[in-house]
Amino acid sequence: MANDNVANDVFSRTAADGEVMSDGAYNLAMGLVLCWGFLVNWWMVRNVPVSLITGIDIRLFLLGYFASCFAGVYLFNRSSNPGVSFLGYNLVVIPFGFVINVVVARYDSALVLEAIRITGTVTLGMMLLGSLFPAFFRRIHTALTISLLLVILVELADIFIFHKQRGIIDWIVVLIFCGYVGYDWGRANNIPKTLDNAVDSAAALYMDIINLFLRILRILGRRRR
Image (cartoon, rainbow, N blue to C red; front, side, top):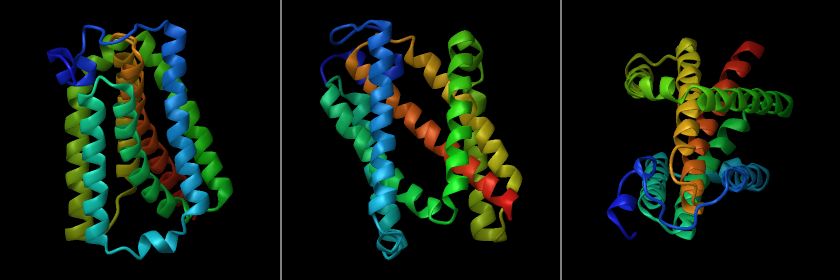
């Protein structure tokens, strides 16, 4: 956690703190880190009983979930050491995996596979757009952030006050995270291409993709009812 450049948000870095990689090696490293997170989540879905997760007191679960996620985000944002950043990444992947496990258990495997296929296709498309039009995604970043905060507030009100769910919210969230995938992919390719930055960028993309997948799965599940 060396210099002032590293102390900033990962996507604000302008100087390389470590060996600069080729474009191909950098993108491969990001891909491998992403695949590791997805593999861990797959293993958790296959081997961690849902009853074990749902048996945890919800307040204790939420406390652990947010503590782990915030600690993970802090580590991979602040560290210039790829090993420490990878540890932070896993602190995000594991609590996300518990949520994925509970959600996926509600749907049949064919629907889950369809959601994975659609998510993968949309993600690749948004990465391409993020590479072609990075300036556009930078311009809409503030709108994405405000929209996401508003959606969170509306969902909390729906859950705790109105006790209902709005299907349109899932579509809005899908659009928001499509924007974030393009934005984060564009940013990932405009910072120094070091191994640590590859890990950090993959962590940001992982959270975008998982949120996208969960909403697509809910939309598909609602249409099948």
